Amino acid sequence: MTISYERNPEYTEIFLKRLTVRAQLGVFTHEKGRTQPLILSMRAWAKVAPVNDDLVETVDYNLFSDSARYLADNQHFDLVETFLNALADKVMKNSQIVAAEFRAEKPEAIAGAECAGAVIYRTR
Image 1 (spheres, rainbow, N blue to C red):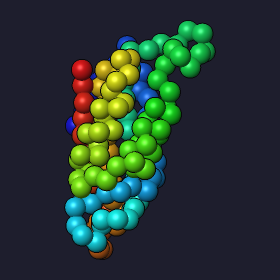
Image 2: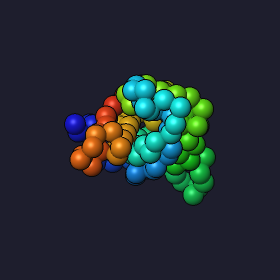
Image 3: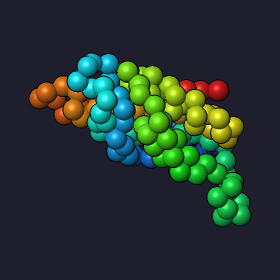
């Protein structure tokens, strides 16, 4: 999917690529009570144009990583999609973000596969 904000000079794309967290995730019995790796990538578009070289004028990458780590550490999710929706809810509280893409990969989900996962999109 191409989000209309891509390559639009009015928006800045901010991203975090392949952050690995240990998440309490899974619907099956063997997935309960343990953590497993979850690889996250996030892209967000914000209508920001920093003038003063100041972090407050843009979206801090740590918003993505801190939100993901908090959710992974503090809650069990049955579905990757539910995790991504919770992550999107936290990140989209930043009013500077007008659109975002959230991707999760579970490398241990399917034997013989590199990974399984999901992608969700949010816009205002």
